[in-house]
Length: 169
Image 1 (cartoon, rainbow, N blue to C red):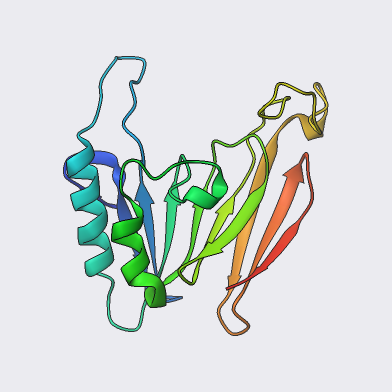
Image 2: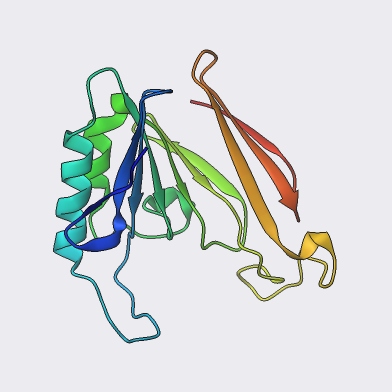
């Protein structure tokens, strides 16, 4: 499958995987400055997400990946208005997966599963030491997500600090 970039933003795009009938959407959910100090246009990113959602092929579902959470239930406010684009597509979205957070979390809103996978930071949001053991395999965090569409189950298999997780969608 080929990555299709939208609005000249390499971080906003999708891959349609015809072997599993899933559109994997990649969306940078908050404007930010990189090492070059550049910012992307939030309205362009929202337009790209709307285009990617509206263009989900017939018979496909979608998984949305974002760096920061795009749902209030995971500790972030929706001041940028992502929910108004996502919630109407509830029947077509398997889940939304984000990183950035210092803790594992999940919630369901409007029939959509939101999964947060923790970062490899050695502290939680309050600066307290957590599961990461510096200098060991637990210093880092990688999740492999397996989506079983026959049972509507997502398996998050963890390498590093933390535990494997299982979600129904």
